[in-house]
Image 1: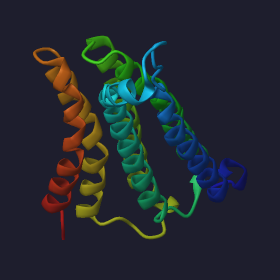
Image 2: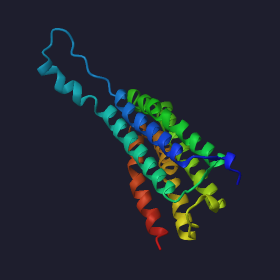
Image 3: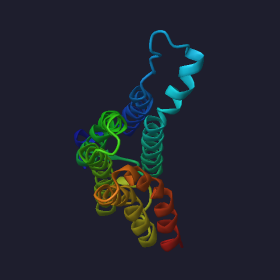
Image 4: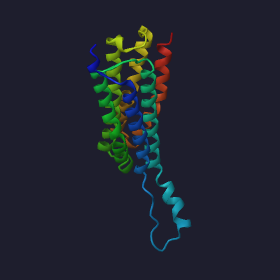
Length: 204
């Protein structure tokens, strides 16, 4: 592989960590600070106003945990990567483009709870990121020269299925949004369950 077609692994990891850190921090901006109406004591009104933000806080927490899951998966993959070619680097940039949109899609779903188009925007955003991670994983399996050591077949299947856990939860959220849109966000809480099942099914 020509040296000019490679990208520094350290620079890719630095850029990735920076974008994740910024995106995860910006999530809190989707929670608006409540305003106490004039003439009403803040001590009286503020508790109710704060508890009324529970949906925004839930959306922020879910988005943060999903981003954390993506970052941990990225870290796990890059522990095995020793070289980054242009194609794999571009795939990584594609996932980062999805990451920077998460604060926006999370803000939409927190500001408009129960509105299907808001639910679908968030699901599309997270599903696309998970799918791109699956594409990255498949690319690495087809280009073992980028890896420290070849990946065993059970580990290959486990990694691919783990990448698809978030898209599966996103599809479930969309499906739930038709009969009960208010409950669709809870589909993302099943991601850890999906990951445990994937690890169990393909454990060596």
